[in-house]
Image (cartoon, rainbow over all chains, first blue to last red; front, side, top):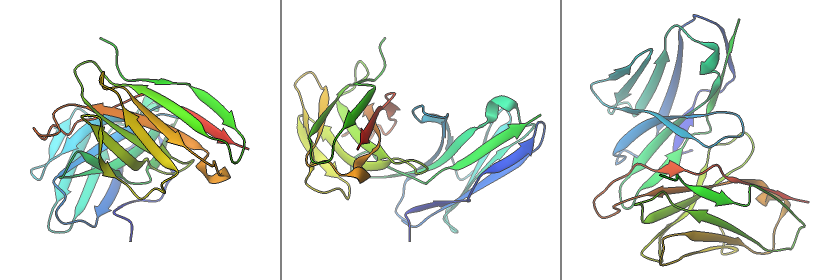
Length: 110
Length: 115
């Protein structure tokens, strides 16, 4: 089993739609959780951290369920500029190691 | 303030050759991590350097080696290249390993093609 597993993509949605991505992780000792965004042929960039209480940043909402080892990302009112690959990332202690999921590709269309 | 820089941007090598990739961390950062990202996959952790020593290593063969210099810059070396080594190689820098500062900043990557 992979350490971090994500929804298979791609997701093709119309502009203005709401889309949700899911992710599960296998290591119960994982400490921190994040969503990264990666544009085509570019480096990953931090989108937002994920907390148990849930956190929101504009149109983006992230949730963590430690009991189920499940992470989610909700994007409301999708924009064309949201088209990218979204990577679920888990931080495990013992020295800054980040474990990435394979990523889910989002395409927002007119 | 310069971010993470990597060189070269692109590289084409032949099977069996050796390659060296370079990374300069973000100003103020002392820890460098290397990742391999194959097409359609997420980045996979190769290893991490701090205080010129390899601190952690992912599941990569000994053909992958590295080095960190006193100015915190780093090199990734790959020997006996295989076709499967074709990927985007990402360098990420961070600060304060001991302080638990996790946030890593990625460079633009080096795209390696092995023919």
